[in-house]
Amino acid sequence: MLRSVGMKQAFLTKFYRSYWQELCGLLRAKFGNGPPDPEDIAQQAFMRYAETQLTQPPDNPKAFVYTIARNLIIDAHRLQTRQEQLIDDIFVETGLAPLNESCVESSYLQGEKMLVIERAVASLPAKQRDLIVASRLRGETYQQIAARTGYSMADISRNIERAHSTIQTILQAWEDGRQQYELQQREYL
Amino acid sequence: MKTQHPIKQQARHWLVLLHSGQASEHQWQEFRAWLQQDSRHQQHYREAELLWRQTTYTETVADALSVRLQARKPRYARYAWLAACMALLAVLLVPVWQVESDILQLHTEKGQIQTFRLDDGSSLTLGGDSLAQVNLSDTDRQVWLQKGDAVFDVSPDETRPFIVTVKNSHIRVLGTLFDVQQRAEQITVGVAHGRVEVSQNHQVQLLTNNQAVMLDKQGMSAVQFLHDSQFANWRQQRFNFQDSTLEDVISVLNRYSNVTLKLSHPTLASQRLTAAFRLDQLEQMLDALQLSHNIHWHKDAQGVIWLSI
Image (cartoon, rainbow over all chains, first blue to last red; front, top):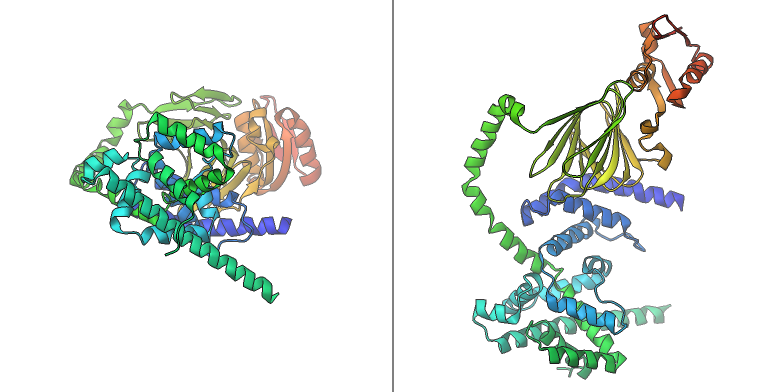
């Protein structure tokens, strides 16, 4: 146990030293000089990575830490909407497990599932992707989106519904496929 | 195409409505009732909602954010030449400007330990015979530790990083309690809590609770772990020396002690020793030194302690 903790520490130190500059460079190139300061974000991302209890190390630690850093930056720039807060409140008031587990945390812990969602979102038509950005990142109401783009409110609702449906269908297919795969594996054994 | 599960569809309708920002008070009440009606409603709504929130943390959104943030750049670029001129001007003006600026000089006398409060809510405790310069600006908080030891209790301020410079090493923090000890050949940085980034040349190390590193001309040591009692123990006039030169030990003791120690022979300077003691046990430590290293000591008429072979 002690040995493995020591090895993890040694790996982290080496990994940190080898990737630190590159990560800061990547963040700076993509998101500018901040705020939040790219160095601070990189630092936080490495901390989160070190604190994360993974059953096995990620296949690509660099991509993993980059994802944490990227999500932290998105979080720093996004607006949490009033309606999101209301939904959270309703779940708590009705005695359900809270929804507002940090998505920054959960997204990278889900590993492959996260990648499936990434790809599903990327595969959507441009209009639907823009609506996700408007609603999720900028926190715009449909009325604000309508005023800016000229789309009707019904059109916006319909496209958001389609986007959600597409992503969920892709995710479902992946989960079914995985179950199938696991079943096959079990039959072999 | 496969027909969709009816509850899944209902959940999605609610999701699209609730996130519109246009749902009425009555509709919110209806949603609450629908949710409480059936545990499958709860399960499917949770799934739909978490999936929707997850879409925020994707490369698609990151790319859109990137475009938005990069769009700000040209405005800065237009004034880049001006910034460059200002920077040049600042460099040229340094000697004059420094006199007028708000750089604060803090220092302690031999044998004195003092805590200074800074305007940003941080505090700085200086060890004996130490000197620090402080400059708090709108963009950052800078401290140059010119001589001696210091403990920093930094108040969090994400917009103004707190940067401590010691010789050629930089210590950068957000909000934390940490200690810097300066010796002739070595600097030690220890962190009680919080996060600290230490950099020297191109080497960078992140330190967190109860971790320390040593820096010397060869570079940075591996991370070491501190016990609570080891953190900045000079504040209690306790000292730990590990494989330090006698010259180093003497120079530290002279900063904290009211007496003065001197070496009667220069060859003693490079003798190495490991010791842990309180300052009020100084004479016992010197007696022990006599046994372990065959170094003798005596006090002269002026109270100066002389060490000899």
